Length: 191
Image (cartoon, rainbow, N blue to C red; front, side, top):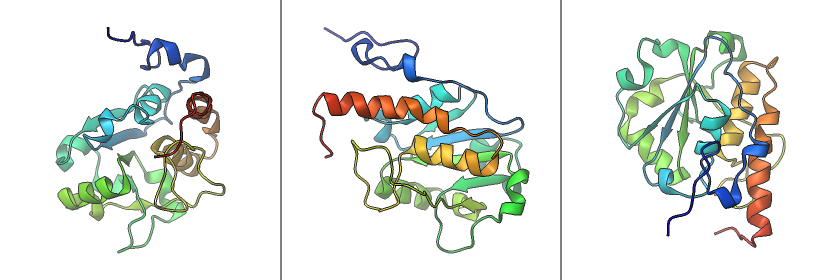
């Protein structure tokens, strides 16, 4: 028998997270594009469904290869920022944060995201944001090969806080905290 799914949070009804979900609008003039690896899209503990429900006006594309036109539409590459720590060029200077009209977030394991970058070389031409989290990631139920690794939901909130400091999007992380707490109560251990 198939489990019933909550329409509000997209999780099975037995582990509904609607009470912790705090949907809100993106800053005016900003588009949030989430490019998700097809394998990550099937992971039951992916944070992207919660990210999408937290920011209902975000857009999600699932796959391995994306065209710039498909992702950006009319937004110029100069007004787009990739949330990823590229090493071949400097990060976007803070004085240009106000010019960002589209934030592209990649979702998948680090290995899958690197493959996504190889399959979509136009992404590496974009100005980019690299995060420097001030505290360890809150996503205690999945591992990261990086000491500064955080979930896609956390990374997006950090980026939005950087781009639009007046917005203070930290309350969006309540749903992630609820997910983690739930899984830890069920005895979930990191893979």
